[in-house]
Amino acid sequence: MQIILLTHERELSRKTNTGQLALAAFPEEVKSIVWSRTAPDNDLVAMLASQQAKLLFPASDTEPAVPIDHNALDTVLAEPVLSNAQALLAPAQSIVIAELMPSQVVILDATWQEARKMLRQSAYLKTAARVSLPPLMPESAFILRRNQQEGGLCTAECIIALWRQCGRAEQATLLASLFTELNSRT
Picture 1 (tube, one colour):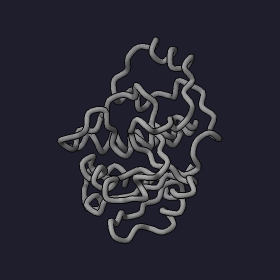
Picture 2 (picture 1 turned 90 degrees about the vertical axis):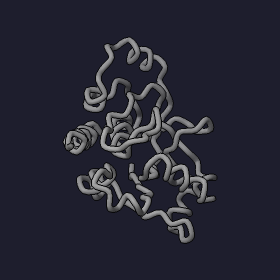
Picture 3 (picture 1 turned 180 degrees about the vertical axis):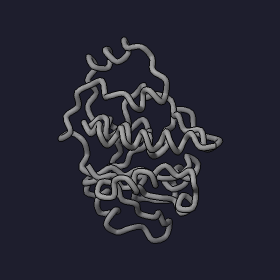
């Protein structure tokens, strides 16, 4: 699975941008496209139109990134509650078939306020097929920014969750470690 970060231009200079962690550590699997309201990337528009790529964004009309195994979900709910950091570093609890994941996932790499603006101002994003993370994800551990949306995850946390779902535990663990290191800076 390739992760495409559709990055708001303001994120490029922010020291707290967690998408940069994934880009630096996994240049073959993660790429970035700078979002433009007036000049969208033609290749990205075509990938979204053909559903070769899907947008990761929470909404009532999204499908889970992978089908939810309700038996596995019941097992997870019966497990002891982990802290946010433990949950990010813990191995995935359910068996997920990687072939069911979209081949390319687009993540809006921006603050929640900017991401909603990007979605609102880009017709190709409004009409893109969407996927979402499974319900009951741990709350965000990201502490370096204020005014975060309740229930929202930062870019690195989204990538970690996607990789755990598709069985890429080694990559998820490495990114979680990098994220924890960044997040612990004051």
